[in-house]
Each structure stands twice: as C-alpha cells, then as structure tokens.
Length: 235
Image (cartoon, rainbow, N blue to C red; front, side):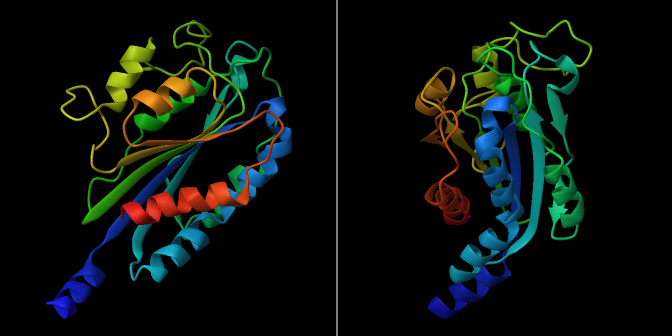
C-alpha cells in the first residue's frame, strides 16, 4: 500500500499561484530591498522545500501588485503585473521587481485594501490536481477604509468593494455565496502591523496568518521561511 501511495503522490500535478502585494511608499525603503530579494528567490526556495517533501510543483506563477496611496498620487498608487510563470518568465519578473522604488505615501494609511481586493480577484489557476492560491501582503502601515480615498480618480481600479464587509464577502468563508477564490486553495499571509484593518483581518478571516511588522523594520529570514513552509505544507 505504501509503495502505491508514494507513486501516486509523485504523479500529482501541483499548481501554486502567489500574488505579492508590496507597499512601495517612502517608509518601506529600509525593507523594500529585502522584500524584493526574497521574492526573487521564491521559486528556488519553494522548489527546494517541496523536493524535501518528495513533491514537485508543476506550475508556479507569481503576480506582483505594488501599491502606494491614492490620496497622495493617484497616478502611481497601483502598479501590477499579470501572472508570470516561473522560471520561464523569470527575467520579466525580475525586471519589474528591480524597478520598484519606495516613494510618496502622504499620510500614514496607504491603499493596501485596494491592492488586496485586486489580489483576491486575480485570475487564479483552476486546473491541475492540487492548487494553492496565496496572497502575501507586505506593508508597515495601516490602510485607508475602502471607498474613502481616490474613488473619483480615473486611475482607481474598477470593481473594488466599497466597504470592509464587502471585501470580507469577496474573500469568503465556508458556505459563502460571494467568494471569488477557491475555499480549499486560498491562503492569506500578512506581513503587516498590528493596526487596522490588518488586526481584524488576521482575527476574523479564515486561512490567514499574520507576522506583525513595524515601520523601518526589515523582513526577517525566519518570516520568509514561514511563508515558504506555509505554502509547501498546505500542498
């Protein structure tokens, strides 16, 4: 029985989609380079951990959403890529990440919930045998309430929920009718401060893990390892 089980496990096709939401406002300058380097090493590290578990990823796609503040400069409040398949599109992925610069931000809260909304509504993989859909949020600041800043701007993305409750419905929960993500596949990892709305999200949303961050503090190695292990252990 054991031999059959091992052979079957080896034939499974694992698909991992990861959306990185990266705060690129001025206060993130000390941590941004470590976030970028960690993102660039994502493929190799996840592959290594999966191999130790006797598994391999058939498809790994990463999408990056960079956010700042619609209340400060709406023209660069959101930048994003499509899903890029690694390692095939590694050069395109690296080029985008290398071009991210920490700038602006205005007041303390940023447009993190808009980025999270876009991540939830991403075109996630629906095929292959087993899927994991992971959103990783990197920020050192609280977020503006949805619908409070920048809604009238032409650059404000269409289809963004106008309230926290609507966003929660979009994320979904067991038995939810409004969820857009696959319940068994989704995970949310927050590298975010113990401030609103991240505190409530970490407490109230299912399948969510938070690593509290502080302004000016870098991404610790153990935290990135935890993120990699969270993905690998759930496949």
